[in-house]
Length: 326
Image (cartoon, rainbow, N blue to C red; front, side):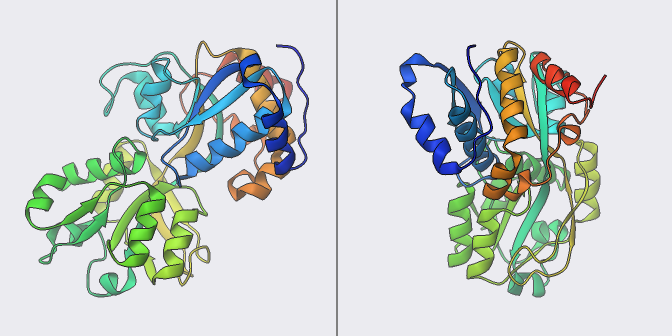
């Protein structure tokens, strides 16, 4: 590595600087996000653009992924960095469900946000009596549901809950239920247009797809059933709150279950790149926060959260320098 220059003061400068660097002269690395429109995709775009504009040695390229699939992808060396959630990362490291093998090469880089499982539902359907997963699986009338793409954390949670209720997408489809498995931007549009009446998204707040969905249709959130809370707790999730006032016409707080949103790296990812990435994020946190509110108030103390995944050496160097770990 040669020269690191930060901070970056404006998003436009970030893009211009990134475009000005000949790609062939740089080491190419990947950061795996989510489907387009998802929280991890947007965060990955912001971080990679900021990093690419701050130095001229390494270019981070954002690729589509999913919160549940990313630990295996990064752990098997098919991605240098990747976003996921704390419980999925630890399960992958230890080889626990839903993973079929251990991924001992996974390393922690930073915790960035808290996710909540969002159970969006049309207000008229909620008022008709479909208030939780208990009602969803026992409905006398087939329902139209946006389930999210396979490999995402939303899909993994849905699969856990379906199993807990002794059913499946296939069984419900045979009863006339309609499911879509599109990315969050497309699912938001389906919700607004009435193609689906329920959709699930494990994300931070605020979430752009949810905001857009609520602008076009009156929505609320389903209640967390006892089965949901127990099943998700057993899978490493913990209680969270979706704040009121973020989504149109949803003024009250709503309880749910969630986990830490984290950035991981492979153990062989260059420690100097990991260290520099954290420095760039830390020095540009105001710029990042102006682009996505998840970054507002982020601190190295928050980033160093210990949830069971070993620290990457580059991250360890950064957090030690900041005095947040010994």
